[in-house]
Length: 104
Image (cartoon, rainbow, N blue to C red):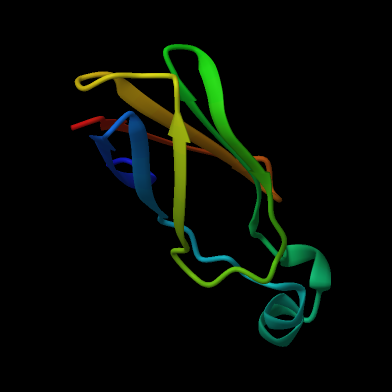
């Protein structure tokens, strides 16, 4: 099972992407309430999207995203119908999340 659900559409040279990351996104406060230790917090802090080996979107995040966050972004000049968008993310515990979607 993929860690990201990705939908991408090409229209008039612009690719619109909507992606959902499957992650619990445990904040420092929630971790402290659940385990008594803030160090058990685990949230996505970096996400990258590539098409044909080129980075089209990159973001650093914080603990203030919801569980299973949804991201929307657009890009142009890279990719065509049938190409794949590959998204990768890293969480605070070092786990890698991955997903792949086709541009339609």
